[in-house]
Image 1 (cartoon, rainbow over the protein chains, first blue to last red):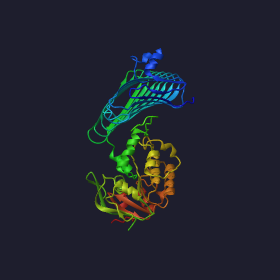
Image 2: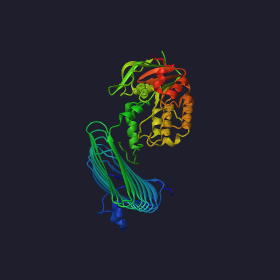
Image 3: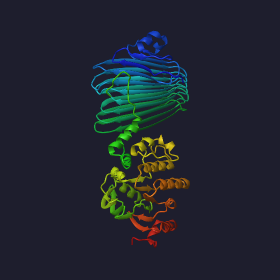
Image 4: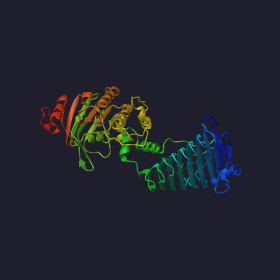
Length: 314
Length: 233
């Protein structure tokens, strides 16, 4: 893989982004991309005013970073993002969506399309940390061409007051998608829906959802795996409930339209079992330490969000 | 007073009595084996000694290293150096390396453990892997008193010998209570004392573990009460 510097895009509030460009990676504001490249217009409904455009033309060993930050009170954002990974390219991307403080009352709408062309291989991490008074509505279309291989991980460490997330994934022949969504909620009303369409032969889709509701939280999660060809798909939903006034509804749904396809699912929602807690306590951990360890294990390794030039109060 | 002293211990789970005025004394550095048929109360004794809250002590006392631990919380017993190798430990969505890092600063390097460290504890582990994970955790805790529950279950004889030798090497000089109904691990541990447990009581104790095991192997546990070593008449 080619050696490249880290590439950055940082949008603060509604300001045009600060961009650090790189030779084989084109990063623009979406509006500029719409003007510059006719071909990309098919992916936008209309000329966007905000959002990022990332076009990776050659493999890049460093992580490509984009940041969308809310910094001022009562900001309304309407970001339309497009990511295009060219054929055979291998790369990593990290997208951060962050509110600097809890009480900014932001209203963020984000629409993202990620197009992964034939044989490309990409690891994408979305880190979300919103203020607890924000309203966020986000949708993402992930389009995997033949033989594309995507590991996508979305982690929401701080949920907004109202949170709507919709993901739609399309897999062509031999494409492979490992899609993980992790939500740690300390309050809020969350609606999540993930739809994975196994359109191509021998494609593979894995959709994993991890939800933790700690207090005053309602999570409504729907995950669908739809097979139209001879692929394999698996849905894995797990929810942990703590405290009072919390609920999680998890609906895994399998729709199989091809007898050669194989779809499976597993789902569980509940509290941490006493058996596990007592086991860990018998290894010398307190109940509190045991719970923290289980939550950390549930969420995976913690990633601290840092954005160059932006002081974040996370 | 003995290092571990259990006196007239009666316990119940969900209102059902299991241990019934059980008495057991173990001196520091000794290895004891507790034999008994299924459902005789052996594992109940393990969980009661470990302090699991579902196992309610109704009567009697447990003293360890001159401290009454009858009412002590689980983690406090662990801090005193009591550790258990469980027969059926739960699956946990935490990597074994992370768990080891949290429970102890001691780094344990054992053959065969590398492949387990990056996996979630007991998730998809084979019987042998579960046992190895348990033993590694316990070794890392550097305990004073170890209870091994059915170590020989789910292990072939080669792996049982390997694991037994590992425990003896790594926990040399420690006090051990080996719980088993199969007795396959006996020859590897050569205990100082053997006890037979039935119906929640220890009905027989002897230094002659070979004789006790021979009786059980030949005639089964039911015949234990007719054995010349039977001490609880």
